[in-house]
Image (cartoon, rainbow, N blue to C red; front, side):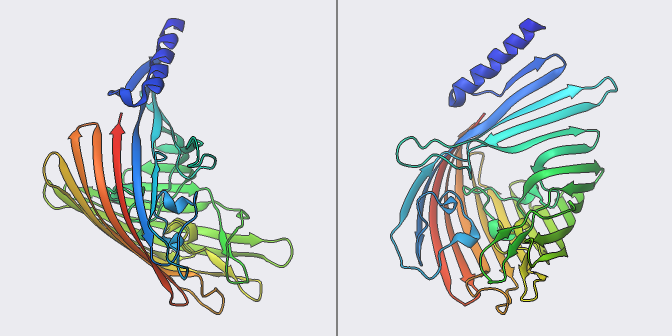
Amino acid sequence: MTTKMTKTAQAISLCLCLGAASLTTQAATIGDTTVKFSGYIKADAIMTNYSDGTLASGNIGRDFYIPSLTPVGQNDEGTQFDAHIRQSRFRFTTSTPTDEGDTITGVLEFDMLATPNGDDRISNSYTPRIRHAFVSYKGWTVGQTWSTFMDVKVLPETVDFIGNTDGTIFERQPLVKYTTGSWEFALENPETTITPASGAGRITADDNALPDAIVRYTHSADWGHFAVAGLVRQLSYDDGVDVDESEVSYGVSLTSKIKLGKATDVRLAFNTGSGLGRYLALNAANGAVVTPNNELENIDSMAYAVSLHHKWNSSFRSNLTYSAFDADIDTTLLSEGSTEKTFSMRANLFYQPTAKITVGGEYAFARRELASGLDGDMNRLQFMLKYAF
């Protein structure tokens, strides 16, 4: 047993040291548990020009597209060039059989995106972060992974980290989920984002007493799949002085992936609700606003996305993506500087010279509009090389 564990540790250590030089997923057995190591190394080069300003060095919007960060109403500056490897990730997956004939699955995954430390001056070193850490057993999933309100299967293939960001639900968080057949039922970690009575800014309240409740149904067929998900949650804010309020938030997500022959598919998403806040468009609008009476009023929003994927041959493939976000901004409560609408469109081409390496290029155009009517544009050209192992 000791010898087997030592060989396993050596195999995993060798995989970690070799990195890009390794062309196979490392797998080993520790007792009854199979351990696999996988992931990818991705290098990005990004050239961005904004019509109404710029993003400062270290701003997360320079690493990937975030709708609410497109500058508006500032002085025009020149094109910015950025290069990073922060999306690179590594993943450990374990599989353990039980005496009853079932399987326990564990996943632990890291990357370096959206983490502090490191800069462009000397070392470009960044802190790893946990993406996924969960256990699955007999229909139950416990730990941190994709929210049940999110349909990962309709995310487009883009050089950008997300791609259809304006129109999609995007959330990873701790949860308890039970899956039976086509149904998923989950209780997930809550959080409320609030616009203060000033009408501008963001308060991350962390005052929730109840988890978010989510139900999803997915119908799968030869032509693809269709899914509908519902969300009910509590928006809560207690400042210890004037405000101690809660509101009910709800949302609906409709998604589908439709195959158009062997080489083409279309991916669709429509999301709407009251107080969706952080779930939609990377929190482009908050969940609620504090009224002059120190009460909470939900902010309504809706968004949609469509993406067309096509394989030209065994080596080349392309994607066209459009996504849009729209918040119901009441300027008697919210600042005219609040994000009211965003949209983005992107086109890309991927080339795969061998099974483990992908090279891609993508052009993206995005626009952000404020409640005042002012708007700003983003033009971005991005290239990547990814080695999957």
